[in-house]
Amino acid sequence: QVQLGESGGGLVQPGGSLRLSCAASGSILNIYVMGWYRQAPGKQRELVARLTTGGSPDYADSVKGRFTISRDYDKKTAYLEMNSLKPEDTAVYFCNADLQTSLFYRRRSYWGQGTQVTVSS
Image (tube, rainbow, N blue to C red; front, side, top):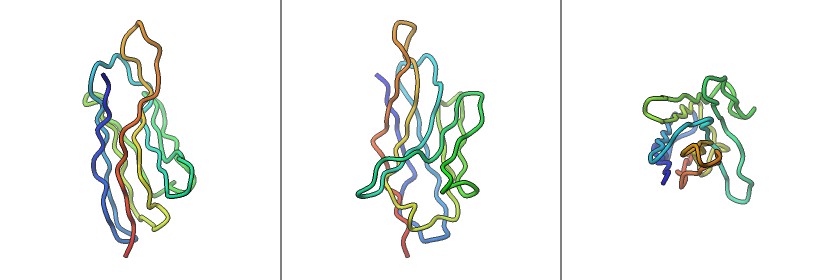
């Protein structure tokens, strides 16, 4: 069974920084993509950043230049470094992984439980 364990959320003042971590555990054959999505109250879940194995990162326009996604492939962990945070970045941030558990199963998407990020003075 695959689990995505998130950590690093919290309350930060505008202009501050936070680092989110997402560790994948369980029976995993290959991880193709790891990324972060967020959902603010009353809004749809949206892509923040994602990183395909061996590829280049994709970012939402609203976070380009402020957020950086990275992965530790050995640890099956993704990180989201968030700088110059704004109140509009306030949301629940969800880790997502597109992975395959074995050769007998197709790749599919998995989600973490989410971690709250609040940017407020």
